[in-house]
Image 1: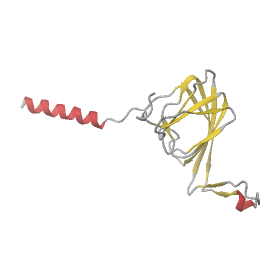
Image 2: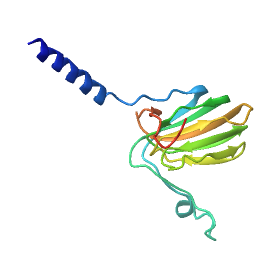
Image 3: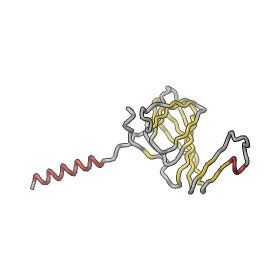
Image 4: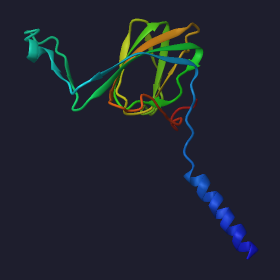
Length: 167
């Protein structure tokens, strides 16, 4: 009888360990401050078609959502050697570096190769995979993110460290 209990206890512990979720990677030296939030009804914006703009086809802008969206503007401060922790978002973000330089790492990049962005540069995070922002520059850095998310969705989803990145 005692052997059965020991065996059952051992199996329970093994199952608990196997089912344990992967741990998120917390940010350090990283502060995110929500500046504004707007709630928008379904959007269908096509500047060239709707406003007859740019007849020479050099520029167009389209934005469409099927349902209500939350749009956030968030200021991120990243201390020297600080990082955001691995995370994702349930929608796209337009990220502009406003001070210093940041290095972005994408979980879907097999080599976990860095991409550096300097003040005045911007990039799009499509929100469909984990990413991490680091300040490897030796000076303070800041970004502003404009995020388009489904109404009521969690703005940031902490993610575990991907297996293709060493840090």
